[in-house]
Length: 154
Image 1: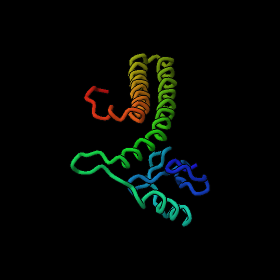
Image 2 (image 1 turned 45 degrees about the horizontal axis):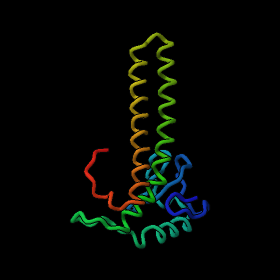
Image 3 (image 1 turned 90 degrees about the horizontal axis):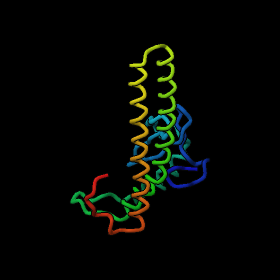
Image 4 (image 1 turned 90 degrees about the vertical axis):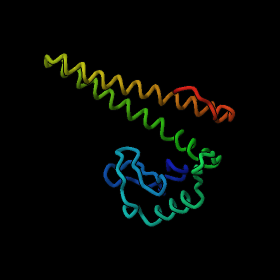
């Protein structure tokens, strides 16, 4: 399924480097798996036309004066609800790899190196907690628009 619009997988863009899903953000391609920005020429003509027509015909954007464009905000929240769980999962994979290497460093007798790697794994876990909080915040703001103009830190 296309991460951008929920369309059938046959029309979703695929990264030529890793086979991951590619979405269009402000006219730029971005692979959700490896972060590459492959050219649209790598996609079939049907994929390119579908995504250009589906995702660039009527995008709304935040106005320069800082006023909230409700359509742009809704689009942003929809995209974040798709992207954030992917980011969390990807981060967890990295943290697991870090912990494995920390164990290897400790087994090789380098506790200092292991400690540094474990700190990096902990920072990823902290980032995931922030992202999980963001999901909760999105859920709250979707049901309580008065919560939009708040000044508490996240």
